[in-house]
Image (tube, rainbow, N blue to C red; front, side):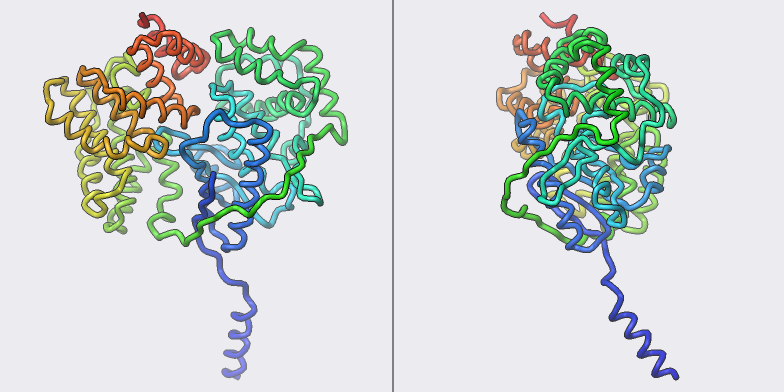
Length: 501
């Protein structure tokens, strides 16, 4: 009996599929992390690269992005929603440090919809590189939706603009909803309101991208939006409002709305480097997203501190803990996340000194990370940033040795501004904070950091003010004006415009 039972269990083990594990796959434009078999992950990355070819053909980017989009995939809603605080199928964590997004993906879903969240962020990341200008909230939601619902026909070509069957328009889109979407500078934070805003934004964008009558209209609209026009004035570039409403209504009522077919020419398979993820990398997935969100940073710092006790030999864990602690330092000084890391010209705001959060833990943790891995780029940059922050708060521009130490750490990283844009921006800023004119190479590195990461508003602002200092006022004004519809940067951009010669 025992022998038969053992044989039965052994047969079950042989018949069971191999267990999946977390892998990291890197291709030309993406880095994808997922708990799945290698073959499945390769299929996903290949499909994303195919979509990238579609996006590039339809909207050629002005310049190659400096950083690859890092996607973390999970099969359900709970993990993502637990970080955001409302039910979502994905969310981005774009920052000067990295371009990341958490997205829902499951092979258990039909092929036509399983890529929805992953496609959304692939299109989202491409959008601002293609237009090279800031985007209003409605277009930032609506444009990626158009590509999120893409699927492939029997010949392997992409069909674009399909309705979102997960979020059908139960109620017709009202004229007032469209006006509100086109004129609001921020998207709603309430779950129910955001869900409706998301659907309305998708309904507005679909005819603009799918119908020949609107060819070139979005390009004109984006130029108008970035030119300093009001939201209402920019919306006028979309054409007759009643006609747009009629197009939206007709698409919603059709059982088969007009779609866009893109014939993808055959191409060589994507080069994909794939490896298993380490234990520390897996343990940090949720915590990385949490520490980049202001609301959850304190909790993330506490959890990261505990993780350093369980993984004391991981430089990556110590770095993430240091970054979370330093985020709390910056947050306490400015009563919220500061513009461009809180350095001089970017804010023009009073520093809150009465209740400053000490940077001792951040300093200890980042030095611990470097003791384990002295070459770690992120830790080298963060240590220099903490030191620069100390120098600026001390208000002693004559500390040549201190500023020299900062620049010695940042200079090797800044020489590759596409890969290390924040290091390049901080390197340039170190001269500004010391009251010294940055050398030409520092400006050129900042320029490349912005151009390769145009969707990061902090770099846009830093570069614009640097242009102003050099007397290139026209270019500076153009960039600063493009930020006047961004609530976070509006006041700072206006101050910089007023101060420009």
